[in-house]
Length: 455
Image (cartoon, rainbow, N blue to C red; front, side, top):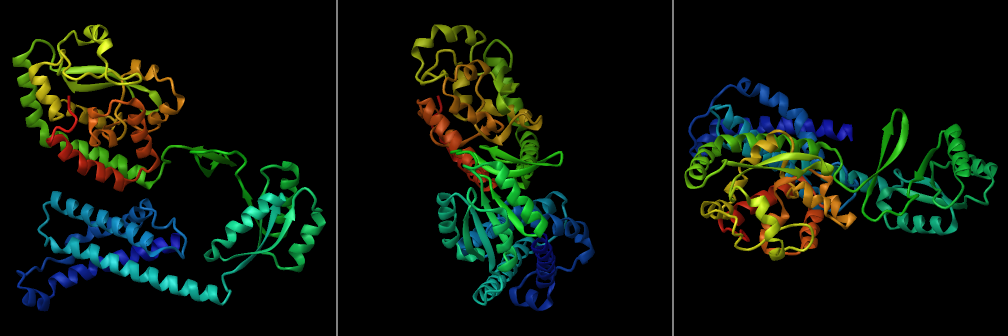
């Protein structure tokens, strides 16, 4: 993968140079009628220096390097398009905030050139791979070792993916095969590797096979499906020099996760700057129209249930928590959540603030503090979290809570079933990507402006 990333970094470098040369070409400027644009290329040096190593990492965050070499073109096109779009957009934003005098066409053309050249590279590599596959140069001979049922299943899976280049030479029963017979097969038939499944057998025999392959210098692939999990994805990690299997049912730490944190901080910082006049105005209106503090503070459940103090503009009377017990019989939500239509505790100005979600703006500071994310499951009060009876519902706590989420853009308070609310949160967690976050953010604005589901 490192070689591919190095090649792609070079392609991004060439693409930016091509975009610059194209825009500053006298011939192009005369034909199109563009104004003369002749800044020295040195002006872009630092952006160029950062762009080259960062661009392949953005592609990696979009899963561009995780797919098989021979795979459906749509997968390559989609991940490549999103990666180039993010890089081009990021470059545009960086140039804008640096107030650099630059033609807007350059970052756009850079993204287009990069997309075309990278896709051309992928097509060339695909043709080469198919050609080698046809000549059998990439095929490798493997032994399947396990119980007859397991080896039959694995053989069927391998045959369904001929692009992998794996050729099954023989199947061996781990419980009935003598070790010296395995070694003879490795010697006599130039075996390239062994695929071992030890799910229902003695690990001592599996260890002996791995040790034999280690001595012979033959690859041993241990199929680590010892336990039947329904949600968790399994990854291999290192624990102080010991290999460990990690069962994870939430998004793993990755470049996408790091990019999400950077976007959260940058988005919240820009948001605070842009809406600070609005927040000052809201604070003044609340102070003038009702008695009590401007802000409402409450302990909410954050990542893995860790409590944190959330901030909102106060939209209710000051004794709202005491009145909540009196209104318990009017609760319209199933489960531990409390919500009612026409809540009498809400002040007149509070209804307006809730309808436009302006009461949520102070949570931008929670995002800056790292307690929340822009997109994620909405945080529940700590006392409501403690009343969750279904253990599966607690998986919504496996990621940072957010300012907006799928529930927020799917009707908000029109959803009265807590299980449906959780289903949307888990759908978000199981399908999370930077692209999904962007789509939810884009859907949030019209939902807020229409007051969709607000109470």
